[in-house]
Image (cartoon, rainbow, N blue to C red; front, side):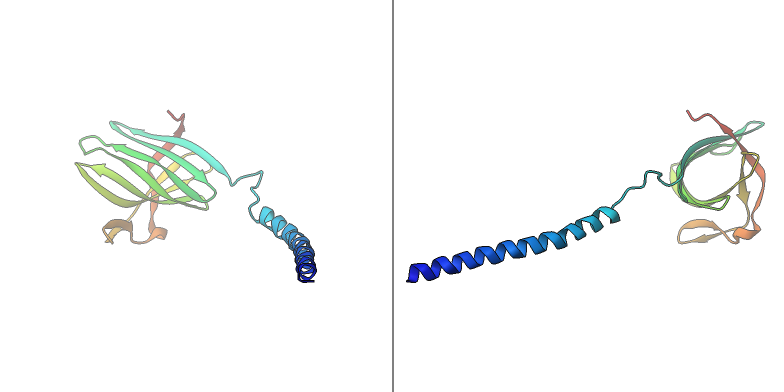
Length: 162
């Protein structure tokens, strides 16, 4: 009799387990679909572009390479200005409409520095560097007022990336 009770209990547990597994599987199917939907990768990724620009005037040159993904921007920037120390570094920032606001981390005279840079991308395809009053904040030089920037002295023209 003990054996038949154990057999019956075992049979009930197996049946209950299978029923619960089917219910879990049905609920899991929905959860799996949700998981697939939430991790869906779009076939059209964010706008991506890589462009290079150069500034040349007299003996001054500057090179700018920007990689844009959506509103995020990274790149490289270097200046070789006549009778001044050259500097080379990386930029990281964002596109705000047609304006680039970024931090320029560069090496010059054996020191690493960070300063804010701004560029305006105009309809002519050129990029104009912005200049204005700067202040020091947290060890970085930043623009005091973005709306007061002047974009008229350094014009970078599009060039082939090397």
